[in-house]
Length: 108
Image (cartoon, rainbow, N blue to C red; front, top):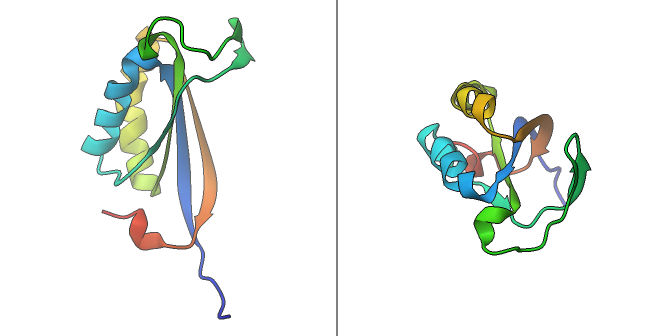
């Protein structure tokens, strides 16, 4: 088996209330991010206490996480779009370095 080439990218994880999911996915698409993964019904504990992840009345009542991988240039664009949103709404952003094997899947 030949060696696997790895490339450094940024992983951006955004957690928001379900009602704001479309805002986040639209922002990623406008920034040129080619794909993302959505995780619904998050549970966890934060500064506001424990959050139960089960559906209450609809998917807008729960927390969701949008996970995407992009180059550093796009991270700046995404953060610029999220800044005013997070000044008005609850949510959190995590950014970390990751290694990807298929660079063409993350470029547009």
